[in-house]
Length: 254
Image (cartoon, rainbow, N blue to C red; front, top):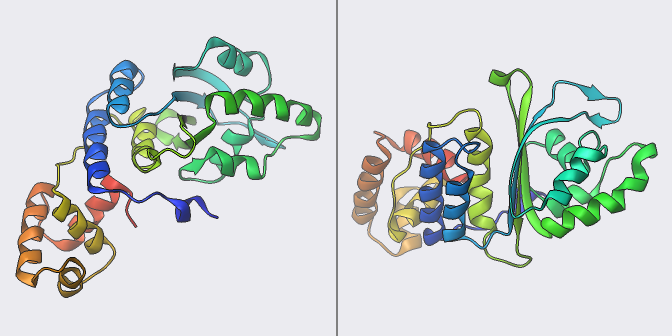
């Protein structure tokens, strides 16, 4: 199953948690304020670990993503794991990072292992690398993005989660903002919404008309329009098209 098809649904409570975290991410530099970010993530989730790496992605080998680590930021990951990256070829043939680099978006760590890519000379490292990775990211989400503004540098983010936990919806929605904040800090801001308002938003983004939203939520159309006026005001937009675009950016809604 494609990761985008398996995306966890956001509850209104989760949505407001995302908003708080997105606001925070927009106000800080992750590389300087990792403790603040991690502390706030733990307020809303039971995330187990976090790894953020800025690396040089300007060179590729014949077998995959050629990576040189430039800087690393980690929480709840001991030095042995970081030493593994430092002292082996993990950065030049990391199957998870390679998968992310070739497939834009947010992915589960499990999806990245379905088709691990390593050159024949490095296959013996796969089980060792997988064992180390699954220790800190038994279940998790990963993403990478390139920054043209930083001349070929990319940002890789990995969150370790509890297997079977309910935090994926929040982490999946904030992880792109963590990636972007490494090279575009201070651009994101979002208001809070009531449960009803967020239900209206979800239906609006899905393309429902006022009548369809009213029928789904057992409301009259006048009430739906009232909610939309408040939503537009909070989003600081003047029409439905602008509102949908902003909500898609804030909540990664489709």
